[in-house]
Amino acid sequence: MEKIYTVMWDELLEIPASDALSELSGYVAVLPVKYDGAFTLVGTRRLVIARRMMKLYRALPEGPPSEKMISGERAFELDKIKGSALYRIPRGAYESLMKPPRRKWEWLRGVWGGCGALYLPQNGYYMTMRLPPAGNCGRALDSILKGSGVVPRVRTNKGKAEYMIRDVEGIVTVLSRIGLVKTSLLLEETAVIRSVRGIANKLVNCDSANIYKTLTAARAQMKLIDAIDSRGLWGEIPSETVELARLRRANPSASLSELGQFLTKPVSKSTVEYRWKKLKTLITEEK
Image (tube, rainbow, N blue to C red; front, side, top):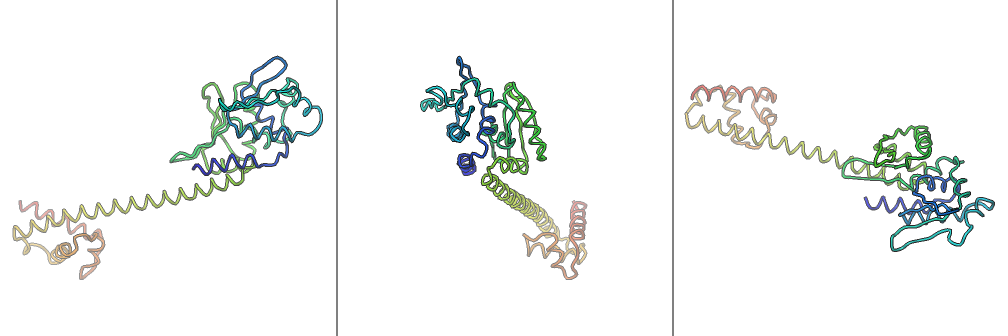
C-alpha cells in the first residue's frame, strides 16, 4: 500500500497549477492559522503540501493578490527540525483567499491536501477530510461531493467535522476529479486484486471445510463397518448396503456423492446418506 501513498503525493506535486488562487484558497481554508499583527500565519506539517503551496504561490497571476502575498521579507519559513512549514500572509491577501473559489474541484484539491487522508487497512477503504469547526467549508464540500454522486458520512471528531467516504467508487471519483488520476487507477487495481484474493480465500476455506466434513463422515462410517465385522452382522444387512460398506472400506477418502456413483446401480448423495443412517440404526438396535 506504500506505493499508493508515494504515487499520490508525487502526483499532487506534478499537477499543473491551472487555478492557483482557487487551490490555495482550499489550503488556507483548512490549515491551522495564527495571527501576528498585520499577518496571518498558515502552517502545515506536510512538507509535500508546503512545496505544493509554494508552486501555486509562484504561479499566481500578476496583480494585487500576488503583490500582497509576497510583501514582507519572510513570506515563507521552513522549520526542518520540527518538520513544519509556515506562511506569513498579509491580512488583506488572506481575506481574499477566503472568498468563494472560482473553480470548485481545484479548491477541493487544496482542502484534501490540507486536511485529507487516505487509509487502506487490511479490510476496507477510507478517505477522510477533517474540517475546522468555523467557516462554510462543510457546506461547500457537501455541495461538490453530492453533485458528483458521492455521499460522505459526517461525524464530529475532536471538535472537527469529519467527512468520510468508505466506498471505492466514491474515493476513485474524488481522486480523479481533483487530478490524482494515476492514484485513482492504482487504487482501482488494488481493489480488484483484493477482491480476487478474497474470492480465492473463500474458495480455499470452503474446500477445506468440505474435506474436513468428508473425512469426519468417513471415519464414523469406518467405525460402523468395524462394528459389523466384530458382531458378524453382514447377513442381516441388505445387499446394496453391503456393497456401499465395501466401497467405503476400499475408498476411505471418497465423498458420499462419489460413493453413490461407484455403486453397481449409481444413486444420489441423499440415498447414500439414508443407507448409512439405516445401518447406524441397525447397529444401535443390536446393542
